[in-house]
Every structure is written in C-alpha cells, then in structure tokens.
Image (cartoon, rainbow, N blue to C red; front, side, top):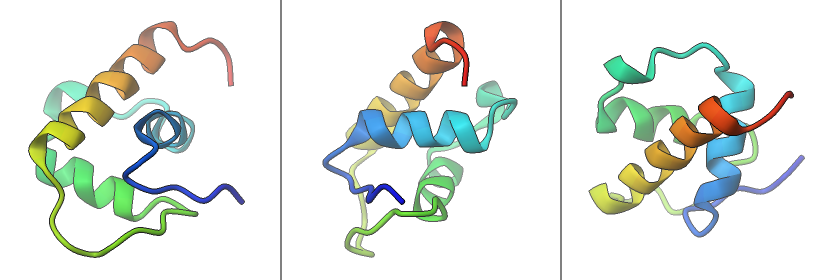
Length: 72
C-alpha cells in the first residue's frame, strides 16, 4: 500500500482516478474532494484543515489524469 500525504498531490490524483474512474468531476466541490482524499486507502496526514490552493491542484491533476492519464 502506498502512503499518501498532502505533499504528494500527483500521487493523490492518480489514486483518485483509480478509485473513482467515472466520478463526475464537474459536480465536485472542494469539500467533497477533501473527503474523497481523506478516505483514500493509504492517506496518512494531519487531520487539520487544508488550503484550497492544494485542493485545486489535486483537482487539476485528477482532471488531467482523467483526460490524458493512460490506461489503468
């Protein structure tokens, strides 16, 4: 199992794409995104608040992975 943290947004995005390959990203709020991330197997980071900029970066990477990321 891979350990995930806020310091690895690309790894988080790839894990999200693998776990939720057909998630409707156009309906995703930042609050929902944070919950999806914290629920990922292997996510181990502080339970405190996270900055919107970081969530937006993960979202952007997840979106790009969904479009261009290749096969699973």
